[in-house]
Image 1 (spheres, rainbow, N blue to C red):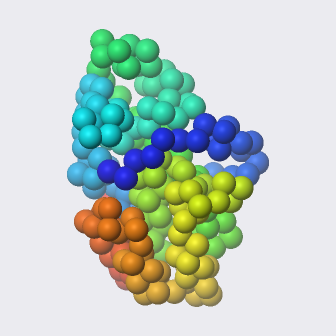
Image 2: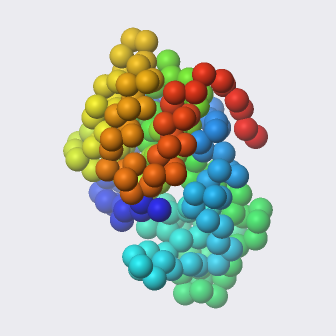
Length: 201
């Protein structure tokens, strides 16, 4: 998992920087089952011995400034989770995942701004998954060279009229992220270049 520590200042920027929320977007690359494979599934706090970073549920961001609030929304206590005295049930994990996907959607749509709406469903799902994997770093252009903001050429290809999906796939294939996350990256490339518009519930 290409996880990064979140810049708390970036996440506390006024919501005016974000585009208006839209309905949930679920495609091949950001479905619950796909993200369970990508992120793992942890009912209790799990700490990666290699990175020292902790994980919970399906990719839930414990380092976000709203982590305690979001845990509270599903009836969990942040302090108890972090000290290992409380775990989540499957229903709570699914609800947290919905909250995480809403954050990832806002990040991805803000990253592409006016170029977001014309994209195919699965292309959107690929960018949402990237935002999810980067823990929403790079949503804001005022923080350059971080997370999604590193993908300048990808954004340019997807901002062409019409979006140049094949070019975007080639750019992504040559990215550092693809070297770090080859399987996940290939799935993103497939989602960006795929023609079908499969919905996954």
